Length: 164
Image (cartoon, rainbow, N blue to C red; front, side, top):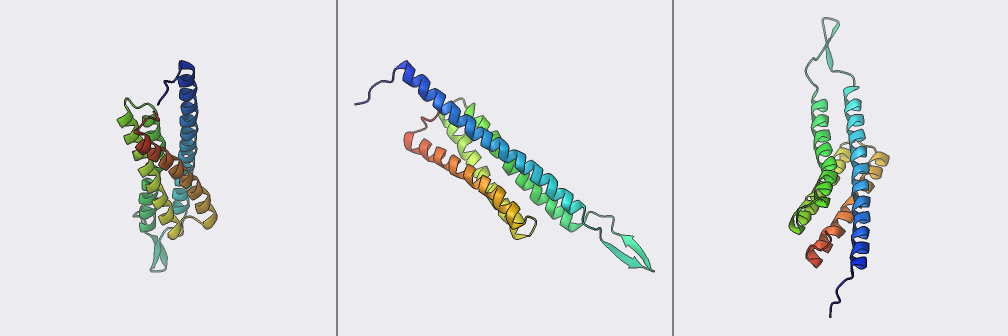
């Protein structure tokens, strides 16, 4: 037998869920900040590499085209920037969802973006753009977001979307 909740219990439950949503969003924003700073750092590092040149008749002739390593770094950074900042954007959309189905959909999209961010971080590390310390720090933050969002999505599946 299910007892109806009194208005005081509903207010407490709503307040608790709001605190949890705010905490998740704060983690998403902090992660987005780190991704933006990492993007800037990696692009700066790539841009500061010595430009390619060849010696022609005893003179250095610099290649004026965009170096391949800068193009690939730019592409990788762009992918990470898009997925890493999209986590918080989709979480914010979930928080302001107009229905339970919309909340669930946006929560799953945030989770997918977090998992994609893990992929790009691993790729940057495997290709020596991130050292072990840099990688482990930001990767751990992203894994924590994946765990929190996975928990929310499983809860939505088990309860039929009653978190919102």
